Image 1 (spheres, rainbow over the protein chains, first blue to last red):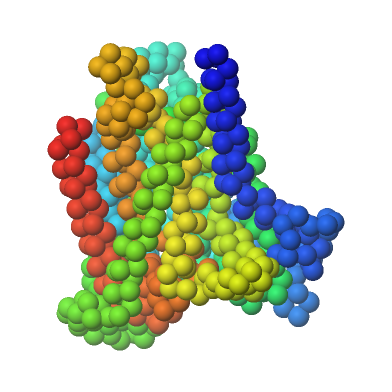
Image 2: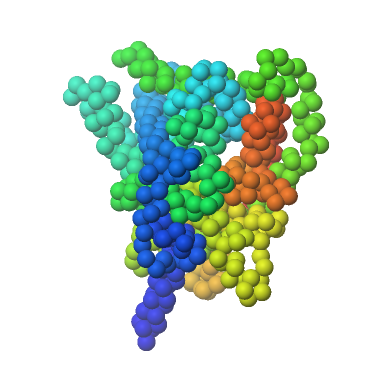
Length: 277
Length: 291
């Protein structure tokens, strides 16, 4: 009797979990279905009567004839800027984290304190002067403007520093006796040992860089340099008459992150446990 | 050996240090200077105006709007996101299997771009959307994004949708770290069901509760994308956030000096608000014997 009651309860919990999951994913579902709907059905019904690729054709064909927009170029810009920034953020974080925890040189404590101070410093104050610096360095409208100021992540340094502390020094000493140099220790020992945390840090950095709107909007004006997120935001008003392609562009904007997330989901829970600690 | 480490240490840290010099220290000093000038970002000449920018900001209607809008957002977002994420955490926790699958699923909204979710929300809720036509056909005429009460609520709900799965994972890790012995001891003392929930689980979750609240409060001071795309700060400045105010002043109206002053005020308000929240939470926790 008691076992049956428990079974009913468990069944009920799963129904509830699926209902919540459906609510959470519904906007994504709506986005995909609307991007595949014939144009006269977009925003008219949730499930289109037939599937059509017209929105994607429109998008990949450059959009409107009178005022074509480089949608594919924007997608490429997003990928290039995000990927480069993320890799740089990872590299600097690993190097700094390693030098603070494992080289423990005279200045390491000082550097660690500076990082902590910076982390609690409100970034919004820097926005305007940063823009002015980029402009006076002649980087306005270049990839540099979007990449360089976002080449260091304090959060990533902080995470790696904490994580590397948990790696015993003996591992490194042993490698040194085997004649490995510091760079080799980092690439062959430290990085493989931090797989799950690296996964999460990469995913978070990539995601945050990918959806950045304000900064990318400020430093780039040339149409061919815009990221997808910015182009989409700018076209939101004037392209009000093209809801289908807007959904298709939204799908394009969501896809790379989803793919990364699915690729990494195996390490997700383990890495998250560390990040949330 | 140690000399080598010394050199290598500085070498490894050098990209970060150069970055900090150019993109942190220098702009920080510049900001401290800019806030006292009336520079318009274009003209070569400008004046040192002392505290004028700050006085202007204090009497500005749009700054006042940003100040109150943030707390309005907080009042809606914080309770919704805390109750929602607590609920999700308990739900995941009580599932015997597929915990990982559901936690990943609930986390998905966190990955969405604010621009993309604004497009969906606009598609469903804009005044002439089919959904609203349907509502009008049964006599309900709602202008969701045009109402000064509903528009902030919609943005708060969008933010809650995005963050609820993330915060749920924080609560979940709190739940998972509660030792079984405590539940057993509570059972002996007669604490079961709701009693156990209120007197054992909730107090033990206090650290997660604290973290989530502080994160959620801090988040409300930095909203930009959603109102920028969806409402542009309107209607009647009902969704006009600090970031929108700073953006408008510095980059639309080209008041770099004034915009920087507003940014500084924003940081002070943010810092003080979070500080007060922290103190209140700590006091509340201490009063109940939580830590």
